[in-house]
Length: 566
Image (cartoon, rainbow, N blue to C red):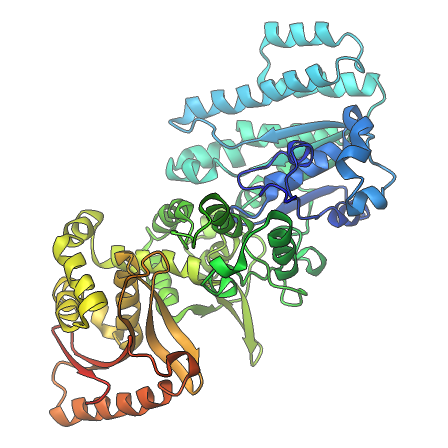
């Protein structure tokens, strides 16, 4: 009997009791408990399973749930290796997602209400432990103290001689919107604002009953800007031993497939290339997959019994919006475009930075790392590189390239029936030249002279990949490794469109507008030599459906195409 796939699940107790498969991460509970600093900070990109892990902590340490320990944890690592502090805390859990950031006053009201609501739930949960809990609740409702309600909780816990474990999820969820509001972020986070006051209250609680704190979010920026408001936490985000605490390793994915009955034969793509690649410490034992991306893929298989229709998680589009907002500064736009084209960037990762520093290149690139847009790559001659982690994230950069040359309205106008008709001509009738002419007219010619300063083959390849991916017909691959070398572009048909007749291997070259014909011919000769090597690869052998094409772009206004037998 297979277990249920935990897609969209973040309530640990409900998962275990509901028969869902749980990838056991409880060994990290033991590691965290053994750290010297009990006030802990840990960040990861979105959709890596942070909320679920916090639910594990909540169920493990909550004294009101200790009677369910064997049911929830008996078959897991921590159930077989329990720690001294299990089931000994009154747990305070905060989640700061979904706050009202419409304006300054609404944010203050929303934040204050969220804290007070959590205090009310805290008293409800421990009403049998705290003396006069009902009277305390009544006082809170009458006085409406907002974040001041924390003092009521501290006094109640102290009176019952019960330590408090504070868990905070999405600590910085509202930060992006506040930054967009300008002065509001500075006023509320740095100065005597309500966010700072909340963390100062937590700090005060550590002198009495708050014995443990665990905070998660996406970036270190807001924690840095809080400065002395909350300066006693230890950041374990980039420690080697916690590299795999969130996300799935390859072995964990294999286990999950066996537990839930996912048919591997229905997965035609390279999962490692599409979803894997994250490293949060250069000495980490294993790369990790974004867990939500994997669950998204598996859920389609289990729901339909067919090859997944969507390879890239549609929820990634929310990350694309964040990417565009980050690129509002000119230098950041240039850096994003360079990363999109090169696939990597030389950078030394910065562990702490504030809002004021985001216009500095090194801080901006580090922010992309924390958002999951880059990950730790290779080190060459003592120079560290960050790289795009996988194909799914690469598609966000491709969307950015399209947006760089065209507004959303222009792109919508240009993805008309003509666009899709030309892609169909490629896919079903082996006619690629009309699409490339369309590409030149509607994309390359829109580039400014400034864009052309550093224009080269890589730039064109990135733009081609972007448009062809957005067509939905192909899963284009850049620098695909073959027997002898790397193809410029391999247009692999989308698994959800099995009737497509032709795939393509494109060797892309570029010459300047005033290039002589001899230079153009030299480029074609070079392309022919490379294509002959690609043809030797086993995956292309004896296949009439794969077309090898050399493409030479001349400036931004002309393109010449020759088939492999030219």
